[in-house]
Length: 479
Image (cartoon, rainbow, N blue to C red; front, top):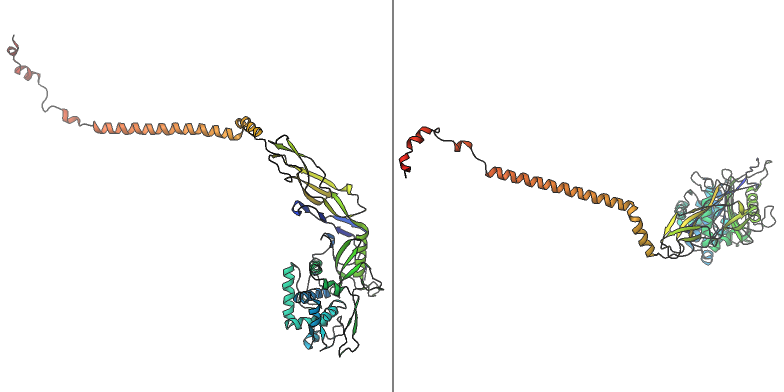
């Protein structure tokens, strides 16, 4: 098969924070490398801090093959709380329900026979070391009564862990339509197992193991890991690697999950979809090649590097009404360090500082007054808060003087004048309206009280001047 070669895209994120992480926002950045990667999907993270070192199609759903067995292992360990003695004391054997579907498939196995009784611990070793499919079915049926009931637990656990792009259809990983996951989800699963159960790595990091003698195998059974990274003497052996699990189906390609530790650095790598054979048709562990190349690159190239020191002053912000000062200096809320290629000069990291225009006293040390954005090659690395290096008390005299001298020019003062004038005008209008109404009422009452009919004041007979004179006697007035 033609070799798949791509440029390595390293996504380096937040590594070290010495104050609360809420003050730092990290984004992914991209570096180029000439490392050859054959797998179609890859996800590599630092187990020291969770930062992503490499990502390629890491959130694309793919057939997991025997990586499925990692969840099978978790369900068993969870049930027994990772107690090795309890697992060694619990025995189980499988009947036709565990074996029938596997007959004739050529699937990986540990040569466990029908009715052969082994401890749960031995079955887990068979499950994780040579990737025995019959061990998966025996455990599933013995624990839950049926494979379907066990698979239901697998899916419940996946949902609980936040594996949003994962669904299981069986316990062993042979091809099934609705059996899928992603590199990122497998990383979530492995991080959980590594952090909670030491027994997990003890089991899956064994290059070989001897199953105990049984009536079916009087001399026991020697099993060897399918993960050639940890098998000394293998062409793919990598002495810094540990665990975890292989997988291989035509539909899935070669898959592998492993960890590696060197010089205080530890990485977890998940790859899916590597070719199974070279161009001549020879079986080739391209998954192991990818892991070795990625680890070599990371260990040789990436170093924890401080890109920003929180002791560095990065500007001043004006402080209004400050006592004995009118400004305060700012510094990063956190030092910022991350995995950084040693062949990339950190002077290429640009710092974009954004400060508040001013602050009003009192100012408290540590108060956010701006941000600094770190960028590389046009990509944002991180945005970090800038905070006050010291506290500034409020000067009340300054405040009062400022208020008194500036109030007349303020919009509040202008609004107050407009409101006052408006109130006076409104009062005048209301007063005039009231007086006008009162005058009208008085006039109406007056007219009502003094109203008369002109006919009442007319004489019954017209005025007769002669009659008046006849009645008048001059003698009546003689002296």
